[in-house]
Length: 388
Image 1 (cartoon, rainbow, N blue to C red):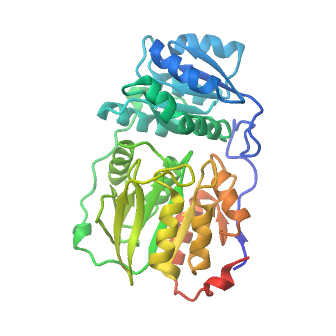
Image 2: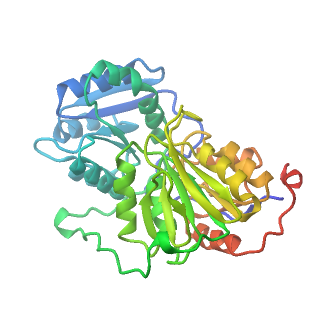
């Protein structure tokens, strides 16, 4: 299938940084802002032993602001709860005045997950978890994830956001009544699979908000730590017409529902003939991730073949490119978010380069195009004809 490209030209908006999603900076200047001296030490140790990274630390946002006047960071690694100024207030100021990619370093508590997700809505590009117990273990186990997130954040394209006061925020509305439950609905034949990473929470939110209550079944991998995926799904469920939940092993994959892969678990779709169930299992990292977009896409290629639509969105690295190519080779429609609307164009670019993408579209066109493909007949070429 030939590649169809419909992409907006120009930048994301006013105040876009010079990070275009291309080559990484030679040295990434990271500013760690956390009131815990131990956490600052651990994070600094991880980053300073990584080639191409330089680290400065601050105990609170006031000190961070002073240091930023001397050296503008490429990435800010930010705690939420701090003295003198909380992290969310600092984040809003940064995003309104001179946007710098911010990665939230959050605890795994219920309050911590909610505040971290709010930070993503305020402009942060990703989340990493704080050390729990055994800092040396954290140092070893989390180094790869942390450095990858920082590298991805350094490539982010950002726009200024209007400054907003906490008192002016609008609460997330309760879920509107929806007829029936997902478990009692008949499984649809068509299946939509979505993968995203850095910057993907906003992209997925916009994508799902445009979906009707009777949308074909949707399965999603968003690179995100464990526990955050459930809170993310619950927030989406309160604002979308279709139901959204964190996937559990054995969940039916049915119309009117989106399943979000659980953090630290791979999500696969099993079944055939339009009768699908979710498999949620631990396993080794795939494409350096768990959950992995490649794992999801490959399972959808095998289960649904030409009865599927694959969508790859903003993100760092190449996770999903191989799986999306397999989907296309089996006759599925495949779409990618364009560079102009991607926070990081790494994942979509790699999928395009490998010949896995049939159409490249701006974010605000993706939902409509996905529905169009999902509701079209399955008259696509054989797997061999799709290779390029």
